Image (tube, rainbow, N blue to C red; front, top):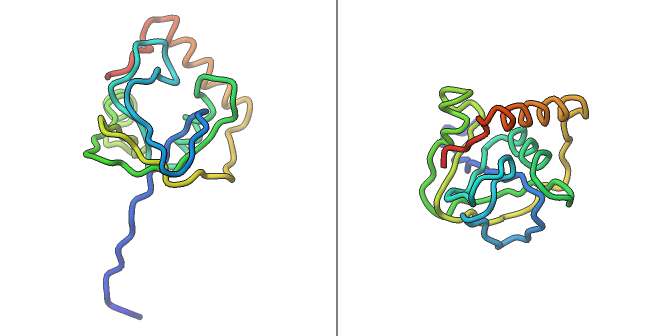
Length: 138
């Protein structure tokens, strides 16, 4: 066994319905996948595949859900929509940046959530929207 330290790079993911290619940039100024508010001034991403799967499954649009491995091009911060509202301490490893994300690769094999679980999440989002609390801290 070697006593030398090994460096691992953190992987980040972005779930969407957008059809992107390696080298493309995901930039600010697009509508949220979850609300009808103004275009966002942040790009959102995660270090967990499960959170990216939710993003791909719940994204607006009619194309297939896609998950990309992305690389931030600037500073990143915790996503306050998740860390402050739902999961203090950021166990979902959800982040955002005002700088673009560079697409590195597409995750081609991933398992979506069960249809009934996905419908529960959609129902929860619809309830929040009906109650007027579907805003995003942007």
